[in-house]
Image 1 (cartoon, rainbow, N blue to C red):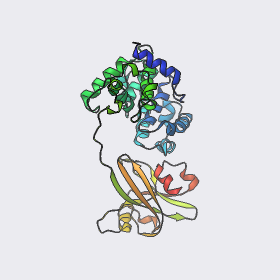
Image 2 (tube, one colour):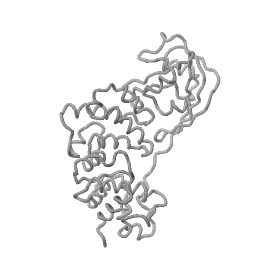
Image 3 (cartoon, helix red, strand yellow):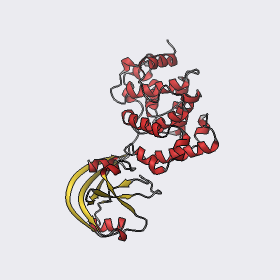
Image 4 (spheres, helix red, strand yellow):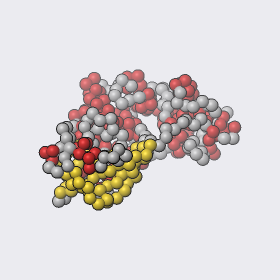
Length: 342
């Protein structure tokens, strides 16, 4: 039987996608790509990655930039905490005077966990350390017919050990990318293309005849459905936006249309808006309904026209501003705002 690690690399050399972050050994560029790719599709990341590196080509350039500029360039990519941690970590790299070269050193930076550290260390510095993301977990679970849920600590340790056995010591970064590519394109969650898999000859799940039985299913968190009200307040050709504070857990520092969660507590939406932002609110016609998903939350947003009393009555700490649509494009905003204003 052929060596599985050699078969894996040969397959990757033949079929690997031409992605803008491949073919470079620049650890900063690889790091940026890995952070952007967390919970985000490759095709979504492509244009963001190019724009981000054009504006911030080095850790020094990123560290010097105001966080609002970084968030503005990240707008629409989601999970903004990634951008904040990336910015903070760039500052630490600059302060140290060098880029960390091992997975252990990389994990000391904010926002870098075992997966990202292994990816950067193996691709940029040839450290033989295995990556373990959802795609790799699925490939390895099927390859050895691993009959345990992959999220347990002991299970992850076992899967990482097996993934490490597939690393070519001369090309560990390519081996890791090959495993991730295999999970993304061939060993898919449903209807895997086993005939195209370089590991099929040694795959235990394939021999059993049911690859989709692995990995064992993990209990999913129930979807939480919410109803929100968003208010479009206009002044000539300008729109009123509020900025989230920098210490919020979700979407910190992002500019957004004023909104409230609709609750069955007897209070009107106008009262909730006044409590959140201050001032006196009046609501007009409904403009549209928008559905938006954030992790396990399914959110229905009703967009209505509205008016707000004098800005001097805003709640303490509330930061507001009037912006033209072309100005909004340069602000850090969320994809939900784009949906509402589309």
